[in-house]
Image 1: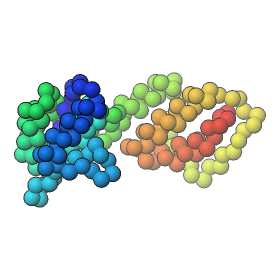
Image 2: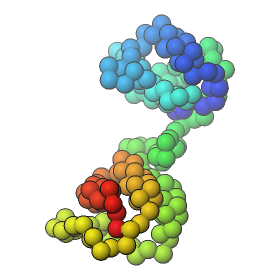
Image 3: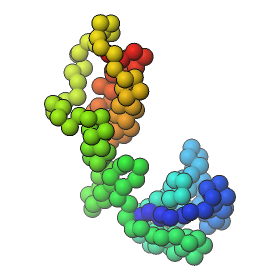
Image 4: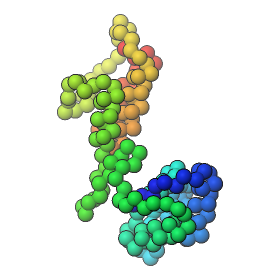
Length: 177
């Protein structure tokens, strides 16, 4: 589930929300302080705050409904239903599990960097490949090159198979050719 449209000033809103959740028997995450956890018998309800959006889920649908009702009685907000897209991640929930992909993000990257006509490959890079500096090569736009690497690092959240290739390219950021 996701809640959207909380347009208050962020810090005071977060403080008010935190206080409200702690009063409702949530505990704050130890590592991520924007994660709130509520345990009820053998069930768990997780609430993740991101700026002015809330994502929540539970092992018990009744806990989700109760949480949604509590939040709407305290705050003016919309319940948007099941989470479909979050931070460029496309999420599909099925009976067998949760599928996460970034296909829209990939298409956007291909267009952004003008690679619509690039050759498609089944694997991203041979791990036995040796790369070194090409001093005689043509210099390229360092800002665009670093932008590609950053974008691909974000993509590796759902595509760990590209991590080796991206890190290999990242080694040559100082003077790409």
